Image (cartoon, rainbow, N blue to C red):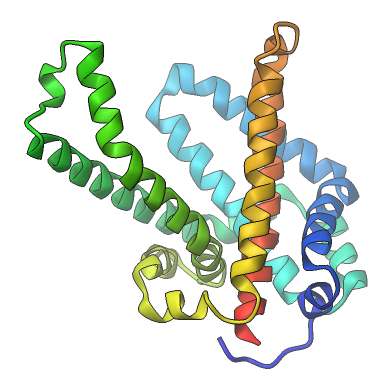
Length: 261
């Protein structure tokens, strides 16, 4: 991570990196409304199809989402200046973004599935070590006790993953094929990646960005719980999901530039 470059992200992080991260994410969404509306419409459609196609629709939705993130990550990382970013954003097409990055996204998606299944297996072993069996939970008290046992380790793990995930996502974005996307996901265990994550201003930047995202999700949860808004909850969630996809793409590459220089 030592390549010397002077690109858009270098200028963006030099002055108010948090503000510029939000600005770049927002500009990508509003400068190409056709891209934004198409992507959100497809996400909404796939979300509806889950009721009919089940796991298949979930897999397609996950790969589609990752492909969009990879596309934007490359776009913002390679842009030499704001003018080039605007030009490339306006020229972006959903079908091109997905076609170019589908293989990398598929590799990364299945790697994440393996990691989550492995984590689930470990958690089951932890639960069983306390004398519980998921097949024989009979009371609410038992379920609450299991929740208390797992609360601390899951919270710690969630914080660690949230902290390092932008750098992992940046590795995925710069992969070139299925194999590259697959193994880039496992860089979450890379000692060098973790060492780099403490360089320069990365900790401060990520903590602030994750804090903003947490507050946004908290607000969303409260907002869609309102009786009137609840009717539009599905659409609102899709809008927020797309916004998060775009934001985390910029965050991941901004984070990478911070530790690269």
